[in-house]
Length: 322
Image (cartoon, rainbow, N blue to C red):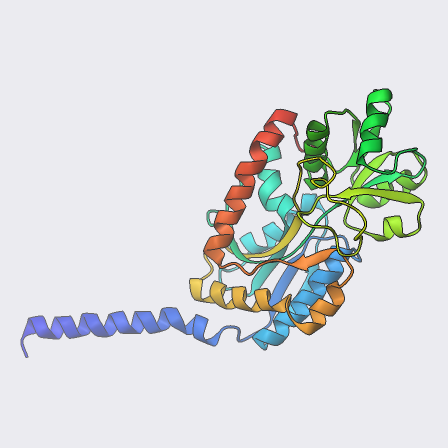
């Protein structure tokens, strides 16, 4: 064997060892507990459903997942957690579309792009919003709202989270209906619901169907492409002649440099978690539904398409995060 052949053998052996070393973490993953950081308000419906999804993913992965609540800071604490953690798949974060789609558009200082800044792992569940009115107003449907608004200019208002999904939906609805109502910013939805019930606020968008179950508030329409199963008599905005449709959706992300093999393993587990009998039972009647399973690269394209669709709406309305 000549020297050149010996060198080729050495290079081959080193290459194979490097390949095995690179694949070893993915093959043994997960070998210890995983931390899942959630930014949602503790006790909220989103928080409750995400906890159940994490439990189901834990069963599928065969490893403990510790759920940590870190609300506040415009839901950005979950993002900070994965940025500051090793890129090994042992720290994950839950995020709403408002963080990864809308906030980079309404806050010029907040630069955030999939792959460049984080790795999408899975999309899980989505929910339409109910367009709810105070029972103190005389209208009970979209046509009634439109007529009232035109007959009483400047008398309507709507509660939103400034720069968030409800704000963007409000602007889309206002433009599509050709009516005007004042935008009132709230830091939390709970207070806006109290003010709605008291008649101090006229309109809100919410995922909580319990707001209308008492009969004191009125659901005018929902934002989904199909009727909300838990509010089957309430039409969609599109059915009511307002061409606005969309949902809030929840996803899982990891450090941007997480190995592809680990991302694929997590994608499979978290996508399956929201289709288990246990999760399906928990989600029934909430207004939320499992999203179609998407591979990580498809999720990246989905996020970018959502950003492209929302950008002109936000620019035209002049929405900025306070």
